[in-house]
Image (cartoon, rainbow, N blue to C red):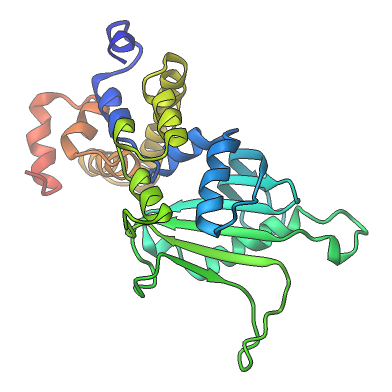
Length: 281
């Protein structure tokens, strides 16, 4: 990465941001897992306790269009050799991991999986898996696995729909899942337990081609944050709009206020003013 910086390929801020990215950061995770069948297979086997699971296809950032409703861009979509379909989502904000969102993800998957005229029994099993930074349900469970069942008897409907929440705060070093969640929060590949994941992280942090790809991803995230700031700042003064830009970049790239202002190229002489206005000293 130093070589890329010296050639002017990446800014100091972007290099630092790339070093700090982890698999729990969805933009990094989706880039790493696009086409990464081996890694997807590993995490699905651990989360679902399925040693026999074999992944044949993995895609990152898959757009599901809904002509009559809201579109969704799914983090990772995979299919195994039995035709079962998996949607893996990173959700660091617990408020965005609500059950109705998982239900919508599941419904969009279903809408694309049955050909016209096909019998309903041909609909494959689906798994919507949310890996969350915190314990969303606060029951101190490593995994929460939901299926439709009768309210009184508990009898399962058997419709093949599964919604799974993985507690990212679970770090028991004596379990495969605890070690996996620890890996998801590692910045340094050398500290990761699972070699297949560590090697993939190195590819995107140290390999020239991978670093170039992540540079483009960071540019897209920064532009999205800037556009959100523009939208929020409509009809507001210049200073308020700049504050919104700073806050959007901080949120999008998990940056400090200082780093966000550097990314936006705000003059040094103006930075103390904005620091004071956003309460970051």
